[in-house]
Length: 143
Image 1 (cartoon, rainbow, N blue to C red):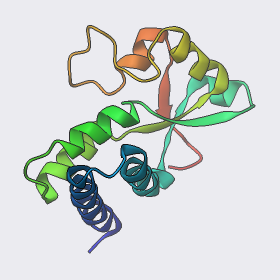
Image 2 (tube, rainbow, N blue to C red; image 1 turned 60 degrees about the vertical axis):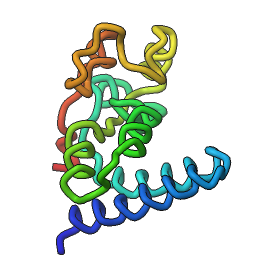
Image 3 (spheres, one colour; image 1 turned 120 degrees about the horizontal axis):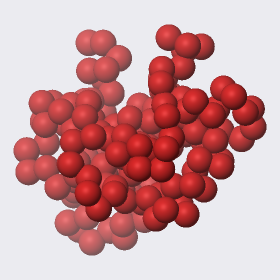
């Protein structure tokens, strides 16, 4: 089993555990924190950076191009939590990029730190970045 398969299997277990906790009435801050820590394990190999990160060194933020809460809710709402359903969602929407703190503030100022744009096509995980003019690409240092 390769690393990606192990990570997806880990997330399957996490999703099922969190769904069970949610059904039991466990406060969302408890199971959501567990969910976030598990998802963070998948982010260690992030290879996307904004253009500004390389131009202006400074504080770098690891940011979900598709907001964490939306990804969490999409995974938590799965009726069939299996390898195919989880990997499809993760492959489409679990994208992490390094952006500057200024770019992060730009997302917040435009009300796009926790949600996708109103005209989002439900497919493009980079829509928030495109809406505020953040350009991202593969990090040559990690490739």
